[in-house]
Image (tube, rainbow, N blue to C red; front, side, top):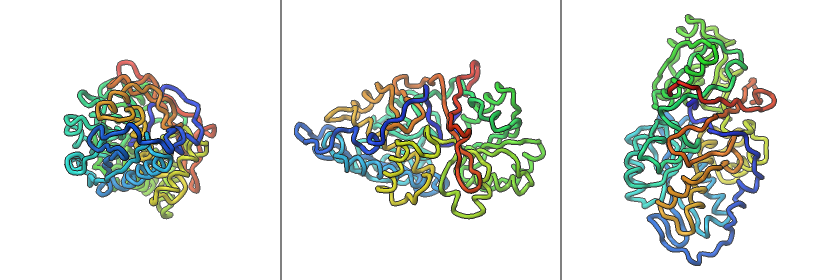
Length: 422
């Protein structure tokens, strides 16, 4: 399926956004809830608390885009606690760093479960696949984002819940909903970080390109976090490509754009999968590299102007010390929904949750909306199956600010491509 690096929500259709009070926690209906009838129902659950483990690429190659995911998750949990918690219990948490490696992810998972005694895991990592087998065998519920590999959709990993919803690693690919044609791209190069999800995504993109009658250009796989794109730019120019999309972390996307501009290719269409982000404004060089680039957004309001988005930003501002205002970066905009999905799972798991009830009851949810942030209702019922439609919203960086593309803010929704394989 078509899934830019960490930036997509799978949707059946556009949904009406919920009021801002939902994100603020009022929908929990738990403020001041009594602890009567509560007991220690599972590891990590006491009469008054639920302990969650957070796995994040705090350091290493992926930290430039994902490293503040942990503080965004903490911010959401703090907001929930301020609203009364869940069934009278407050959420506590422990953070462990993967160092952006698969072995680091496995070590973090084992430490959190075996030594820290957490009930469940919330993760944001480019290398989570290293931890997946252990967590599946142990029956630990996990909420996260399927940006690292196919394990999120494979048996027996029904304990894994991605904020992007259901999917399949080997099913039909999605079209891009007409996005490439809308920006005038005709010969497209797709650059993939050397991680499973990005490589799988590349196959889907090329199926979409061929179906839409466009031409495929270079297909390039690069190390995660690389900033060396000199040879790529020369090959891109030689082949007459006019559009490039990087399924990469932000530092790599900026380096790719800079290399293309230095090769004299100042009018090519460039898509940053790792964005939009306020980090673009750190220096003039990054602003110049990103000027004119397109960024897929994870919300139905990509410029964060509707009620649900404004409430999300207000929560970050109040509870996340890493958030400095403006558009949230990738770690923040992904970390919050991951924590939000954890909250959903805890809510549906019952007054005295167990790991089994969390997994069983979250698998029954068909209309999760990420408190109104998602482009459409997300379904967890049909594990390992793709939904019929996948939607993206985009913004363009005009050199000083992000603006919706198109101006109407309408999402691009692609359908499954018969006969294709991701």
